[in-house]
Length: 112
Length: 112
Image (cartoon, rainbow over the protein chains, first blue to last red):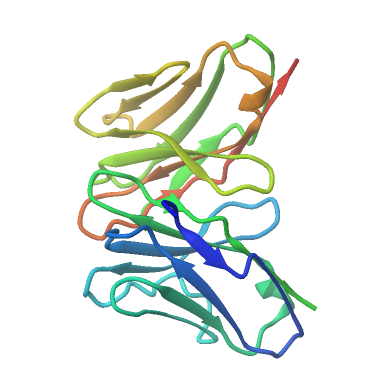
């Protein structure tokens, strides 16, 4: 496909479990972002990858959150020991020179 | 870091009226200002952007203006239609570490 894709689209997990969220950016886009959007709220920055540079992790809310980007393409956001306050839509976006970030459809995470 | 304020939080207009959403930013080094439209349950979509070397940009019924001196930028929608109803987010970023900071969003309601 031509756009950013994310999987799963929905994830329900029990408190305390670990979850992995996947993002496939647009081919050739060197920049990749993760944002979090709680119900009815704005876009909270989590982490940013640019090429082979060290990621900017300044937005990660706790050490339970981590992300990787393999081969400069696919990214995985991992949340360990999930809490109810982690429930949100997790949005991935990718970008190339001359454009703003383009968002994927998001993964809706519900922690019960 | 950058701080983006967005007003109003809710805007209700009649079909055919104009709508204006305003944002201010704090970092004078910011030089790229995208706007996103997010329909209910959908991903944010980039609808228009402006760079700091221009003062205005138009695309059909949508226009953005930028006042670098005052550090504010606005989205103007003319001849509003019900399908314009959505949440609109402004953002600001600067070259180098390209991480957009988003406003809190404006819920635009266009009444038929």
